[in-house]
Length: 217
Image (cartoon, rainbow, N blue to C red; front, top):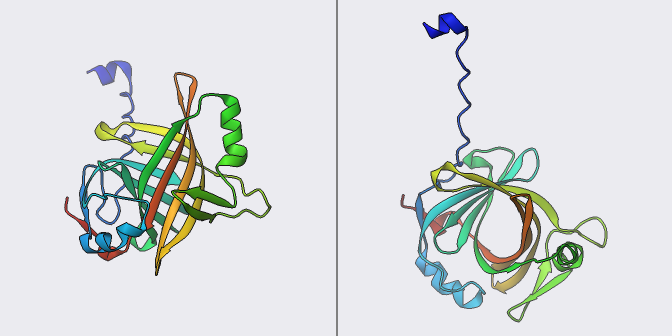
């Protein structure tokens, strides 16, 4: 009756975006890591006390270009499993999987501190941490090699989504025979109530192979 009186009905709103799934990894899912491999390599790593079972609490999506993106599955153990997709969004487009752990987060209190961070503290030829020397991976065409800018949309429980601008640099060191450990140094900026909330995030990570991870939920 009301349609006849007032014309067309209101358009149906588009469905809310959902967190993507890949390799069995999904929001509220779970996975286990290979215990034997971790016991063998953990003494050589900055990463320590890695949980064997991980519950996924949030999912991040980071577009890199028109055909590549990171999917990040944040767990209850202060880390995340990162999947790199190149050329598409299917499992055959997975080109890299890493396990990352947060090492340290520092607040950035002023605009001047933030500018210094972006100019010369995130990206440099080498980075020292825990007595190890890490070498820059993402080299630019010039001497500066500025941090790589990216934007992450993070889906948390209940379907809520938030956006964070990130300025990052990747480093690498040889941690043992056929073993690399990675370092990610990131300046993060989120606008909350028209105010910039900024921090420096330092994370370390390792490569994961298909045999290292078992989906259990």
